Length: 202
Image (cartoon, rainbow, N blue to C red):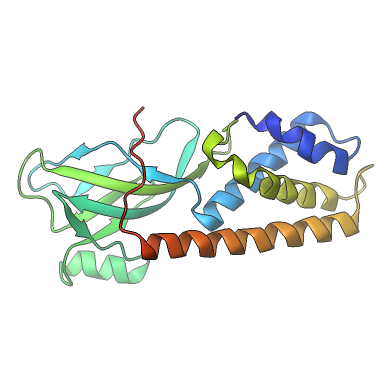
């Protein structure tokens, strides 16, 4: 869905707000929601490995930005995806089993695959880019949550006809609560199920 589909849920709460400004804050809220909950996640198409190559670039569709590499499997074998200094240390030392270090738009495998053409499957969580103008139709269940975030931020803008501290506080709290609830739900789903997300071809 295009981001302007959120306007009927946003504009009544911020009367006088221009459409383009409202869409910009919908985008901000969508980025924060997806980044904080990992709700926008799927399996990328297979990446063919190169023998001895550890580094691989993720090819994401236009309008999407990587939040986190969730899972990597090389020829069906899972690689652990630790984060922060632990990942860097383990990757440098090549110890602690099979692991992945995530970059901004790529990842490194330790150890590197040893056979050309080995299949690398990657589950990722993404969010809209700063220039994106859409939100996935199959995540429309979060439309009201994102609208609340946009309303909360817009209502905080100073010296506007729609500035309203009470609305900002109420909608901001609703947005924060929903982020926490959805993040916990998704974390539990990742922990309790080994089922892979749908493969998206593009």
